[in-house]
Image (cartoon, rainbow over all chains, first blue to last red; front, side, top):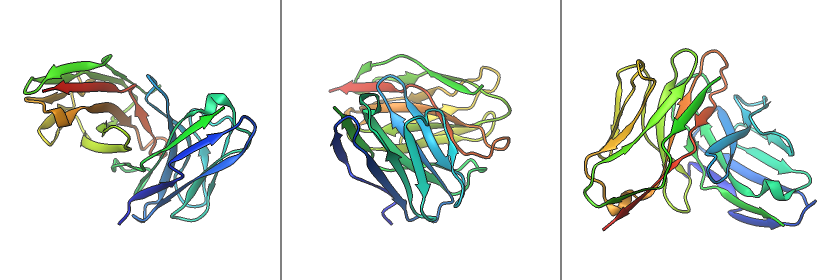
Amino acid sequence: NAGVTQTPKFQVLKTGQSMTLQCAQDMNHNSMYWYRQDPGMGLRLIYYSASEGTTDKGEVPNGYNVSRLNKREFSLRLESAAPSQTSVYFCASRFRANLPDTQYFGPGTRLTVL
Amino acid sequence: GNSVTQMEGPVTLSEEAFLTINCTYTATGYPSLFWYVQYPGEGLQLLLKATKADDKGSNKGFEATYRKETTSFHLEKGSVQVSDSAVYFCALDAPGSSNTGKLIFGQGTTLQVKP
């Protein structure tokens, strides 16, 4: 099993450009999450999908959109990138949202917006 | 609301020293508590967890006890190694009322172990 995979690993964008970060899991998990990691701030939740067919805003959703394409895939889209979105983005999944299960994280995407 | 506070880093220790990283939390109800570790250039990995008061999570020589009376979940290791150098995150998960499964993270504590 590959676990949680993310593409790309690195990306540089210019202000105003758009891009989609891809995430997939092969553990048959129901819930998926997108976080951003900034120095000194831990991880903050952007959007999540508690189950296939549902998505909800997290703590810092502005400037992002998500799509739960199917049970395996959960993508994050930046429509018009801004320098404030320079960060490391992590996708995570867990079996069920309402159980204290482990969240499994992908390796991250390092995004720089110039 | 729910929150997690970790001790400020970085923490620098010599090999074989004793490690404590403090973590306290604020939460409604009875959260589950986690420690995650992030090695350089990698994603987060679960280190240990505890789901109810007085539970002790342990893994790879690390331990943490869920103390409800002091709302704490401090991470300890008796003898650190250079390979333990990483960023450690305390997190809580308050499922049930919201059914979101989202984790609330502390800001992370960087540990550097010198030979």
